[in-house]
Amino acid sequence: MNHSRSNAEAPHEPDLPPYQVVLAETDWSSLETAFGNGEDLPKILARLLETDPKVQVTALWELGELVGHQNTIYEATAPVAMYIAGILTHPAAMTLRPYRNVPIRADLLHWLVSKTYDASDEIVERVEQYVPGFLTPGTIVASFRELRPMLYRAVSPFLEDSHEDVREAAVIAALILAEHPALTEHRDHLAVHARAILDTGSDDPNRRVARKALEAWGHDVPDPEPFREEAWDWGPHSDCRGDLEPPF
Image (tube, rainbow, N blue to C red):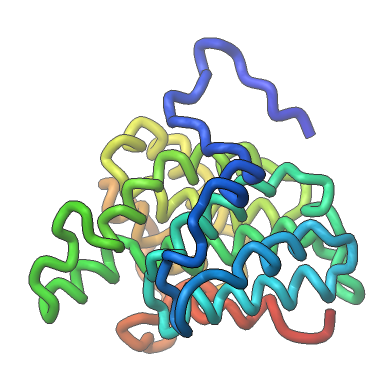
């Protein structure tokens, strides 16, 4: 797959710091997780670069529990997301899941989808009804949402990936990330990918994200399909377990 782009198409989004820098320069023990501080996170993150898919998937599941428990954004969620986005191009991301023959890169993207959805406009608007000031600048969630342009820069090269699972996960992540005002210029391009999800996708939550993005951006969409009734926080891979359980 060729990720090269012409100068005219060069992205304006800021680069993520290298994952090695995120790992080495983050004061993990000072950051809150769902079960204390993040002192164990470096060891878990390092296991994502193993070549054993069982080790990688278990590490992703542990990260989901520590920094995404109950669909919550914690202090440690942001640097973990930056690390995961930073290793999308690492050779370890191409490890194949036995039985499914799916690259671990798809699981990494699904993980990012889960966390970005937890901080999406849809979710935070609902939470703010009950927690005024939830999005005050400098709060944990507000700071996490400011990472969206950098995360988009890391995700966007996979929008046309040759592997269907990777491609669809990248599209869903990009659609959620593109809610950020700085990414408005990408929405028409992303609309093409959203329509492809509606045309060929079989995952109801992903189709829902695609439809809502098109509607929010003023695009005409076909009449809604009879989606299943969702809980208020139902979203794509919202508990990060669907792709992180056996068979490995």
